[in-house]
Length: 309
Image 1: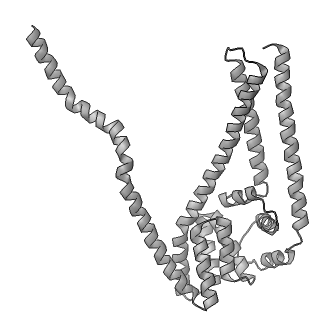
Image 2 (image 1 turned 180 degrees about the horizontal axis):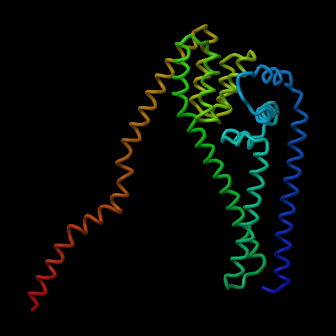
Image 3 (image 1 turned 30 degrees about the vertical axis):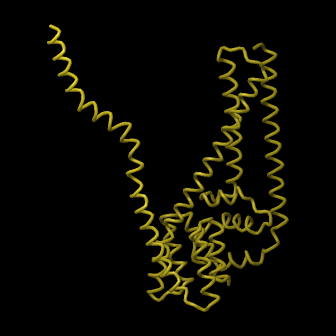
């Protein structure tokens, strides 16, 4: 490629970068305007929830960020996914977009350089096509990584639910009310899992502000996107509607969660022989076959050599 083609390729990449930067700027301004427009919808409720918080050492900015997301009618799904993954910073989405854009541009440039220096005489359109494909793959990979982190966070929350119920039952057996039990347990989880504790603190603040426990648990299930928490929220709502004890509900559901966890462990254990079949057939069986057959083959070779002599 001559200098003109290199200059054209560089101009195309610079143009793409400028367009992406312009789109990011417009999107950021749009999000900020939506947040300002919706800031006064439930300002009194948010102020009340944050004002009664006196037992938790919280980051005010993180909680304001969460309430600004939930109070907005057009909820930013990417920001909520980052919140579920444990990225509680206000600039989490900005960092994600910056990293994604940087990786896409770097991948496009690297792909173009590799194609140009491969020794084949590609046209500018072909180089741009390869660069676009590489950039698209990198853009998709960033989304895959985010999905993986979100699934890991959901799996971790699902694993913590039986422990949460057991701790709540222990606190209630000790004579603590349900709301106070949630406060105490959320403080304990702050040491081991700060992300899960963050969501529990929000549930506690909503309950202390006067929201029914069933509605607060439903909001928790909506934040975490875990089916088991949705089921628990439904049980709390039914117990409140029928006047039943939430303590009995948690004890029964805790027992069901233990049985379900045991069944899942047995299911995974029963699936191990099938999963081990392919590695054994590929790696272990040929080695054992060689160990058994090699001496026999050596003896046969010696016998045939003696017979020929």
